[in-house]
Image (tube, rainbow, N blue to C red; front, side):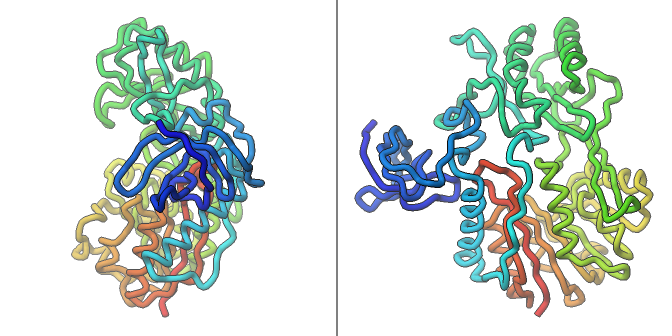
Length: 436
């Protein structure tokens, strides 16, 4: 493919450098603003092209050496070459640009970025598995940066939980020695505070020899081993017989401390340290009072609902997945919380006829997936609601929903980023809205 020199002028939303060749945008993997680089073209499209840096001609002062030996090959992290403070500033810029361009709103004040450990933070994820006959070995890892169809050949990962990250190569050796080496599709991992689980998705029944090998690996390395022969409901423990996954969340005092149990494929916030900081941040913004009635939408396991319950008169959490609601109710009972109730509802469908949607709420908390909460905002919040805290994993949907809340009489009082996924271009953020 063609090589050429160019100047990087900006970063795009996925962390690639932006250059222009004959007026056409070129997204350059590995390029940073202010750098002059020699690049090789990868792919051409109608409205933009894609390229990668093959030589640095001038170097940005914000460039650092990536910690991971597999950086550039593995597509798990795209920003390890950018100093961490500059990463956060870039994410804040993405959030501000989305508010202005999509929502037509600007925060009255910017919150200080929320940060935590930059390495070894990822407690949940999915590792791809591929039996590569040409290499005569099994690869376990994330997808290649340059070609997502392939699994990157890696031995370790610096952002994954330290019980798992250094052992990714060992997982490849383990699967490579199984009778079912060609039939293991993926390995999911989930780390609680005291237990780390590996879930092996297998496309055919395992032999007794394979089951024994997986159990022995779990015992040797301290992993709880689960098998998944079919859908999510088929997941079951292999060793030990009754593993327990849980994480603790501190409160203002011992009486507010919580412990939440979860299943290995349940949604939990990927970054445990950031989750604790985010929870404190959200509660400060929500300012729950003993007489408040609070509605928590997209509540999952009760990650926000149960801490809120410690401080208010009543809270209701609403979630679309039955299993998560069951475990949220069990977590409430386990922690002695009686003023939290949970409902099952698809929040991407019209729920305005539901009892919880008709009731008056003093405050609302949203924590939606990437699609955002626009369907809910067709009928909520009611006029009795004075404050909304919105936790977002996608700045474009947050910006759109901020515009909708502005139309409903709310001001965007404060917003800021939370670095849930360091060294990636993922932008997690939080915003506070108050009724005008």
